[in-house]
Each structure stands twice: as structure tokens, then as C-alpha cells.
Image 1 (cartoon, helix red, strand yellow):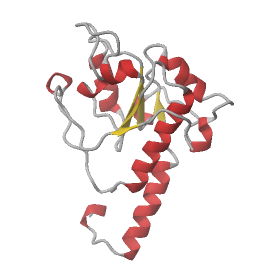
Image 2 (cartoon, rainbow, N blue to C red; image 1 turned 60 degrees about the horizontal axis):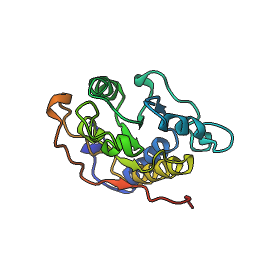
Image 3 (cartoon, rainbow, N blue to C red; image 1 turned 120 degrees about the vertical axis):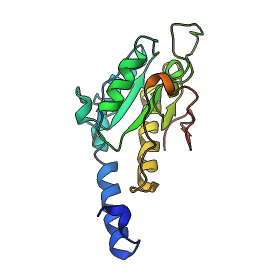
Image 4 (cartoon, rainbow, N blue to C red; image 1 turned 90 degrees about the vertical axis):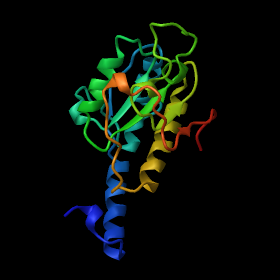
Length: 184
């Protein structure tokens, strides 16, 4: 019997809030820097921006220890299957932030070698725009993801995953876009 089998009452609501609080404050990102956006992603880990205040101080090298993938930079057609494999190896629940215009839409590289949006390979939860986006924009994307985790239902299951070749045309239920500007 899982959480989805229980009726919603006072006790289960408190347990659900506790689980969401734990998930929100212990999101561990996987390293997936592909281009110049990765430098800005690394800057978020430094003392100036200090991502450790959100419980994310260690970027995990193994996808089995991570539950957030930050795709920073352009994704080539050869890298797309590797990206999908890393995503499939991550533990559930898992989230994806698309960082930069190249990861989100292919950027200025409108050719056959670059994937025109990482959402063709993996489902994206939050988009962080910019070329490259500043560390503040990535922090705002992280805060947007935290809010999405806080308000989401924990018993909702992700849709069945399909191989990367069949994922084209995937559209998310609700896309969160980070607005440019300093987070408040």
C-alpha cells in the first residue's frame, strides 16, 4: 500500500507536506555541462552565489545519486542518446532545467548536427533563458523548481518513458519559464 492508496486526510496531508519539504531542500544536481553555459553553472557553486543554501552544494558525478539534471549548453545529435541514458539512470522523482538558449531551442545553431531543443530528448520542467544565462538566472530557475516541487502532488507519477528516437514531439503539461531579471 503506497501513498496513492491512502485517502487525503489530516495525517496524510502532513506527511505529504513533510515529504515535499524534504524533496525541495535536498535536490542534488547531476553535472551535464556541454558548452559556455557550464561555466555559469559552475559559478553558481562558488561562494559568490552559494547554491549550498538550497541544499544543492554537491554536483553529483553519478546519475544514480542525482535527481536534477541541468542541461547547460547545446546538445548535439551524437550527445542526445547519452543525455537520455543519463536521464533514465536518475532516480525518481527527477527534474530537468534547460539552461541557455542553445539547450532550449538550439540557439543560433539551426543545422542538422544540433538538437533544436532538449525537450525533444527529455521532459523539461524549467527553462532558464539567456546566452549564457547569468548565475542569478539559474538560481531563479532553481527557486522556480523548488516552488513547483512544493506545490506539486507527490503521488502523481511521471508518464512512461520512451526511447529517445520516439520522444520527438513531446510537449510538457505545464512549462515554467524563468523571467529575466534578478530573483527576489
